[in-house]
Length: 228
Length: 318
Image 1 (tube, helix red, strand yellow):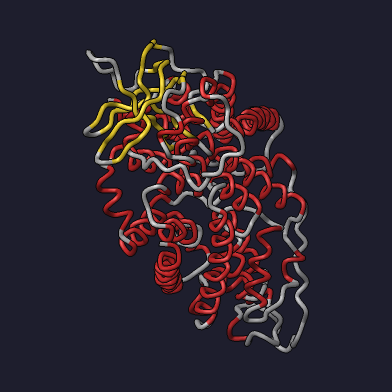
Image 2 (tube, rainbow over the protein chains, first blue to last red):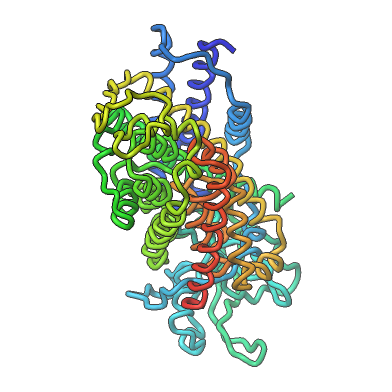
């Protein structure tokens, strides 16, 4: 391959990766993949790669001193992957992801302040129950939460959220047991808003808090489904 | 189908997270190449058995690059006549002891501060150990013949016998060899070099992310837990993974993140410490530096040391 074509291919490949990063930032795809702390970094890197590709192309107008080079096959492969990433947006199944993860919240058991019950999100509830697990403290409290349906082995599905510190690869599921109305159980991965009250139930000889669902409505997956 | 879609999303998450860090790493290495071409100051380094490797390791903060970027720099150091220990310390420790790698490790594991201290500490220890072991070999058995020849030409005759050099004036004792002045390369050349480096490493990153996302999603959790929960086997399997995946050190923390929940802490540290020193990609790159025997010695010594280290960490933290 001629040197000019090699240089154009290089600029094209860099520009392609720049486009992947920038498109992911602009289309909101990152909300589904990364913790929001990293979003500006991804966008800036996309712009930098596009600029670099432009600079490389401009430099080719003058005769370059470097020698004739072949294009490594692995570049074609990675360019093809970049095109695939652009073409096929991610659509993960949160329940499949959660099924492969241990549900650990880490060491953060101390809560600095607690919201009134009706304003607590699902994650707030789970954190509160971990720090003060006595179910009698919450019996009768109103609950308004949303999350996805996470099937549990040997018991009814929970309503859950994913916590992400860095990216989807470290997602940790947090879930609340729900007493669903009799009839058809909810489908795995479905996003639901649940209104109800906290109650106490006995399971395996231990009492625990459970949400008694009174009103359930299906909702679309939130724009930012991951929680910090 | 749900598993495939999930693996695809994890793959994208890992890749989009890691690419900016890769770009920063390559960018800084390119900047260093442009600002300090030839690296004349690198030759003024100490030759002390311990101080040499430590100084080399500390250079990582001045020349932050991942391991692939370090091989050419280490070669230039050795060819220019720098002390072997210093060059080896740089080669083995600088891929971890640099701000980009520490930042990405922190970004991936904000909740595990012990790892942020243990990773550079272990890397430094390993680098000093490897430099000490490799210095036991005479230079002629350690270094690649072409490199050795370049090195002999840069060394003063007081240190090298005439028979060890193919050229040089008989009787020119102690003649000081003037380091060759390297002109600052044109910006366009630096850009081209940097872009090639970025694309090479990005392609390896794509492969690494694909392996990590597949293992994480498609392997049954019971397998992962059985392997990952056993102290010795978990360390060994993550060491094998580090060697196979060959991802560069500025982004490997993000891949480790994918396994962090399922494996022992010792295995996690072993992955983060072994990868920058020995992996499949590096074994190819090392051939511009070492003879095959020295490469084998490096791999064996690093593997044993990291296994012991992983076991020890498991004893402390499990």
